[in-house]
Image (cartoon, rainbow, N blue to C red; front, side, top):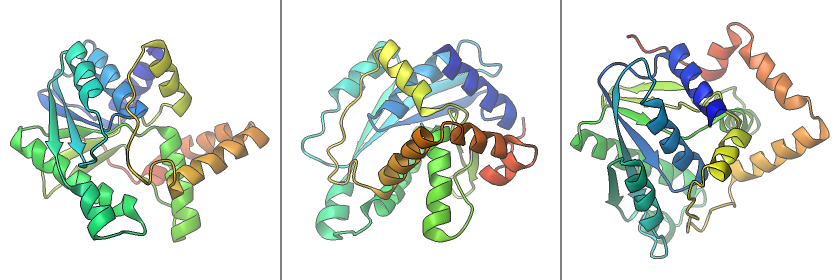
Amino acid sequence: MKKLLGCIRRADTDYGMIVEGDRVAVGLSGGKDSMALLKAMKLYQYFSPNKFELEAIMISKGFDNFDTQPVQDWCDSLEIPLTIVETNIGKIVFDERKEKNPCSLCSKMRRGALHNEMKKRNLNVLALGHHLDDAINTLFMSLFYEGRMHTFSPLTYLSRKDVWVIRPMIYAEERDVIHVVKTHEVPVVKSPCPADKNTVREEMNTRMTALYKEMPAAKQNILNAIKNGDQMELFFHTVKRHK
């Protein structure tokens, strides 16, 4: 946890992710990344240079076999308010629209539901559980499938909703998150989504993992390349929040 918190502190310092008085919502899916982030953000409250309030929001996609009780219990143990928003996203994506690429539409609908609930609860910052491996995988997905160099940013401002989106674990590697989940007994709820573990993103993650095994220095070299001077700004296409 110490290493993960160090990554969060660094990201907050570099990008000004949190300012005094922010009301932060962690977007929970029940997966390891968002559940670990919630624990880390709770601890970060104690030594963050800027005081902030913390809540959690989960968007239920309407699958019958999804048990949200472990998520509720986890939030209760951390004394973090949880709002579960019930939707029919799963039915719309898979039954009505029969999407060939369900993840894209599902993601857009979940984000919309998240942002709307945040406005209802007067929350102005959304924290997502993406880590550095996610950013690298997204970069190569963009390169191979779209012919461009692009990935998500550590900090994004959504002007239409007046919401800041932050990714506090952007400097953390997936193995750091896995370590926290194991050592702190973070509960993980398996997704009932039919597309779970069967997506282009999962395929890219498998390919990159195989690459790192074949070329052990590849991952660190990629990180070094994007950390050199202005390359970090180019890599993330990011802005820094003004304090």
